[in-house]
Amino acid sequence: MNLDNRNVILAVVLSMLVLFGWQFFVAGPQLERTQRQQEIAAQQQAEQEALAVPATGADGTAAATPADQPLSTQVFADRTSAIAASNRIAIDTEDLAGSINLTGARIDDLKLEQYRETTADDSPIITLLSPSGAPGGYFVEHGWAPAAGATVALPDANTVWSVEGDATTLTAATPVNLRWDNGQGLIFRRTIALDEHYLFTITQSVENTGTGDVALFPYSRVVRQGTPPVQNFFIQHEGPIGVLGSNNYVARKYGDLANERQVDFASTTGWLGVADKYWATAIFPKPGNAINARFAYSTTGTTPVYQTNYVETQPVVVPAGGTATSESYIYAGAKEDSVIMAYQTELGVDRLELLIDWGWFHFLTKPMHWLLVTLYGLFGNFGLAILAVTIIVKAIFFPLANRSYASMAAMRRVQPEMKAIQERLKEDRPAQQQAMMELYKKEKINPLSGCWPILIQIPVFFALYTVIFISIEMRHAPFFGWI
Image (tube, rainbow, N blue to C red; front, side, top):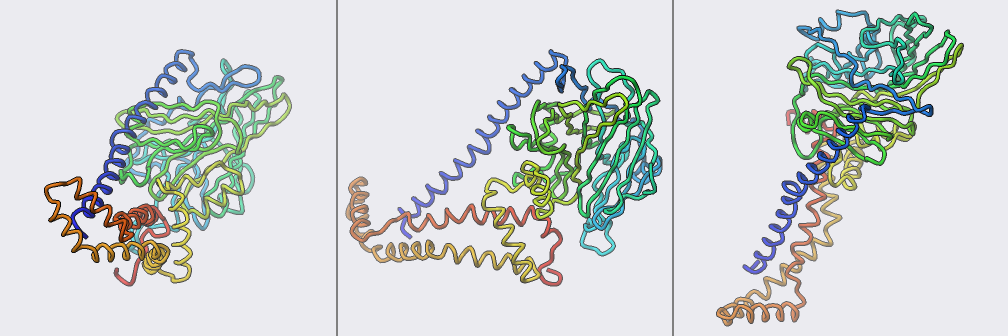
């Protein structure tokens, strides 16, 4: 390849680097700053109106936000002590183990039975959720928010629930039923069901034995105490995340949320939660129900607290002498694509697949993931599957590569004539370039045809790298033996 061709290739590569660099280091941050300023302005306006997250019902009343629900100030030396400090109901399925805290009816003790911290056989299984006040506190809470101005007693983080019925362990076949009486004519019940994977179904009901109707707003929140270690790599997002109707995909890094303090999304739909590299916790109402959503940051002492929560905008009206219910969901587990897609399809959840960050080239990454998993099913080894994918990609691009090789061969063939032109017209650069172009035209050579196949393959192999980086199926997967 002569000097001119090398210069052309170098110019193309440098142009792409400048383009991506400008987008990543300049345009992207500027857009984020603009969005933050707009969100902060909207937040300040909302605060001036004295409604942090307005949830207006048909009667014009507004629900309080769960963001201000108090967190326990009790601190535990370790996770075991925190679990032992309260009465609990065990969780026991093939994929999940843990317990539900009867104080607050929180799901705050959850481990993933199928995944271990390291490849060692005796390695501890992955801990996902932990009680408030324990190191790395991380839990999910459901409840009711009152209408504005209401003084009704509602269950909160300190409420001690009792167990109804015979079920004392939550399994895939046996839901558990909890009960609490506020002593003012309202009896609260909560049924927690769990499927064979990672989906909790929370059915809240209120029985009204009083003489007047009561309007309540269902809420749910995910709270994480302390900043977890993250890879902080641009390929994948770790932190608060959600898909919120017309707001589309929404994500915040922990540091960004700490700077913003609070971001509200009023009158929207969808789901939100917290995502790690391989695990995620998400909350959502029945698909289509309108919600007011919030990403928030606060501190308890010196401990940072990150929270994602929603309040349904339509109140549940409990008639006097009657009962009303509300149903919502929790996804808490591994980011397994097949499981997530099944929930998205069966429940109609809006783009739940984005719990997995498929990256910039998602239209390539998802098919690449499917191909790798399919080939793994054939070979029983991800190393062989990756080699097979590489061969398949090379085969698909072979026609382009073949044209590239032919073009380079033609360039080598005319190399003596090109050198002669360069020598003859070395003092006249424009004339030299004109003579080169005439030579290319005469020999039917495109000097760029050797570059395009390489440039086209870059997104494909970047998608392959992304799949290898994010896929939980390849976590701890060996090649052969010790490799």
